[in-house]
Image 1: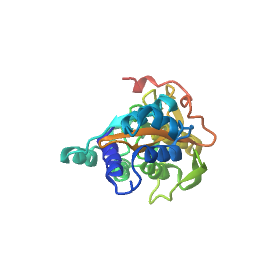
Image 2 (image 1 turned 60 degrees about the vertical axis):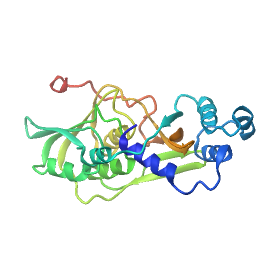
Image 3 (image 1 turned 120 degrees about the vertical axis):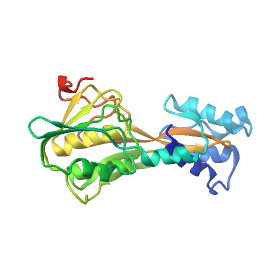
Length: 262
């Protein structure tokens, strides 16, 4: 878990909303979040009494390998600073014929300003976006990044939760990328919101996906506080881009060109 994710969940765990405590609170929150049915409260009490960690383990086993218990520690000053300064664009180089290659390793806090600076010399005949080592991150930042490539889109990403269906829109961008062709490099380490970005670019910007099948992480997790310093992560939504298949991994349009082999 990244320091930033740990910080977010730590805030959740220390928030004053937990008026109800113990096994009943854990069961109620998990039942509201989880896509799959959770064990009955009576069973948790029978097996665990009021032992919160025990209850979390019982629930995690019942929900399968996507659910897990994690140990959380409040991030120190260095960890918070690292999250703020880690770049989104980790490589940039010109390509022959007026093209440009950029590697996006994450969706950082300064993702949009970084991308705008990297593309300041455009328009480009070809833009290659490397997501092969991007394991995902903040979905809202990803959608703002997608907007500069595809413009505003209503109901661009679908979320299926335990209580029904909801949609995420791509917002109106403040500027647009100018590129004649877009290629997106993907592979087994391309996951989560990075897969969503690749799918959105193929669906709405005509981008080609080059490389190997992606990881296939088409679910979001919700955090349920347990005992102090521990949380239960449970699958809380299935995400999809209409017209694209993320579950099982995005299938590329063509193999990785030799010029990008590493």
